[in-house]
Image (tube, rainbow over all chains, first blue to last red; front, side, top):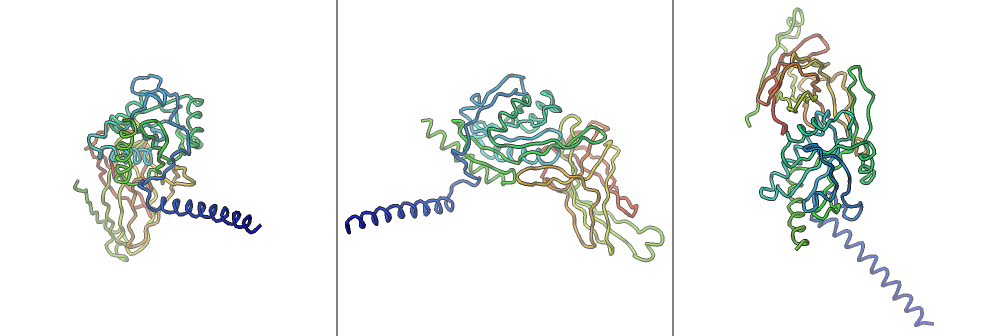
Length: 210
Length: 144
């Protein structure tokens, strides 16, 4: 009976220990996280979509970008402030990688396919650099992707000129070379913080792919 | 890059000049982020008031654009959107910054072809009827 109690106590102590250890590891993990952006590994599905690539009109899927580190951002071309500011920041972060820049792709997905023609989106993406890929889809294709990553967007009331504002998520999703989601940025991170994370991801992905 | 710095001194108008003496405003970093086609552009600048009484900025016009509005980008619950700004108060001694991710002039309906390096005239308008002419330099997409 005493022995039974003792075993129970040991089991309890052991469980408490595991809990404490888990807590400590989590705490340490938070403090010593190597990532500047928010680590979302395993919290969302891998990169998958069917959209039209503005540069050549071809249909592309998430798997077309395997082997590269991918930054996924949602916006619209009639957005004069936030979208170009974020795309510039992402572009700067990628350019700072030097030779590694060619292994990173920035996917700019239009949440305003009614106004963003493929030709317009192609010109827009090209203005930000060769690493920016403009992607457009039907509302059904777009929703399949935005639901997958819980991205929201909405349209404002058109003004007298018929122009309208689009509200959209500020999230930037970062995927590793295997297409697995790894980091979540907000578009307000510094370029140098993002460059550091991208450099880590590029190194790590090279290692794991042998 | 060397920043464009413009100081503009306005003489007070009519009887106001006699009462308040010389009034002054300075505008710096007046720039436009270029985007292709006829997409709306954002204009940024900083304005400092050295006046003795409050001012209210109520808008801007430019012959290079059919329509200019004051906007502010805001973030709520992880969502970014733009809100229209009717006017902005400028207290004596205060500096207001129109900068990426916040206040900006939304420049719509281009009346001329624009390229980075160009300059476009802009007129800032105040609630007391005064205006301030400032050239805005067109920069590339990488505006800061």
